Image 1 (cartoon, one colour):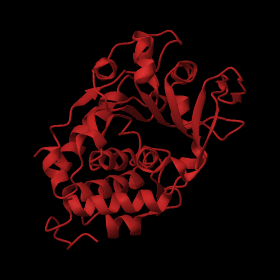
Image 2: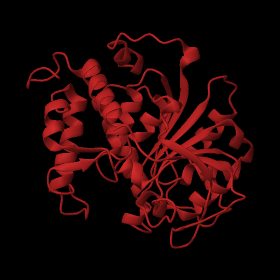
Image 3: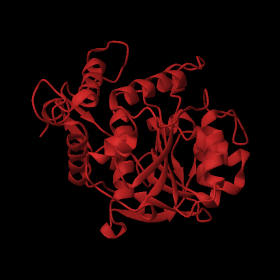
Amino acid sequence: MHRSEILGRMGLHLPMSRQVRVIVSSDVKNEADDQFAVLHQLMTPIFDVRGVVAAHFESKAPGTCTTMEKSYQELLLLMEAAGMEDVPMLRGCLGPLENEEDTPASEGVDFIIREALREDSRPLYITVQGALTDVAAALNRCPEIAGRMTVVWIGGGVYPQGGKEFNLAQDLYAARVVFGSKVALWQIPLTAYCTVEVTMAELARKVRPCGAPGRYLYEEIEAYNLSEADPYPLRKGENWNLGDSPVVAALLQCDWRGNFHLGHAPYIRDDFTYRENPEGKLIRIYDSVDVRFLLEDFFAKLALCYGEGTSSKGGCN
């Protein structure tokens, strides 16, 4: 099936002029929550998702250059479950930048550049749920795209001090490139994204009954919790954090809600702490996320798109 057919089940008709273009970048096989954020974006009619870039998470397997491919293969499985196999899936860079001037090539890098340079009056957002590698590589290869897009990034430590945080640690050089460039940046740091907590009971009730994608999302988290290969099981046995999903809230919520502030982009030290940089560009820094707004939107869209008559466990409520 095509994405448009799935979205048609919601009965929401939006003119193209109200849409925004979105490119998703995700280290989707890193844990088990990126899948929720990717599917949420694909189920959002106001988002014209141009493509999804598979990102690396090499800090878990340094030097192997295998993690991006794992993310890519996971995206294919997710799209098969979701019935949206017409959405372009692209391979990103194999690993982090070697330095701040590095210009590695990848399908994802080329796609970002092409889409940013394409003539289209609708704004372009790059939602990054992992390392900033592909965005930084695109900026290094083609600096003129900086004024043609906005980067929405899940990552970075607590303000004002900063500190080591998973997505930032994946590629420090890439973060420095993006923070130091002219590209518009919305940062959703640890303090904001860590608030999107769910329990397995909640997911079993509201996600698992929703057809093939609902079962897939639930079983991925369940399998992740039982795996001994990963050092990050469910935090206390039956709760998890959908920490990548706030990219959706950032683009859907009204800007007057007061849940972010503007600040100068800091310089990020080698130990991942922030150094004040009065000369840095102004960036949007999110202080909070409306968790009710975000999760209820996801649950409702999942039910509308996949809930009716698609599960032997009954309807999706």
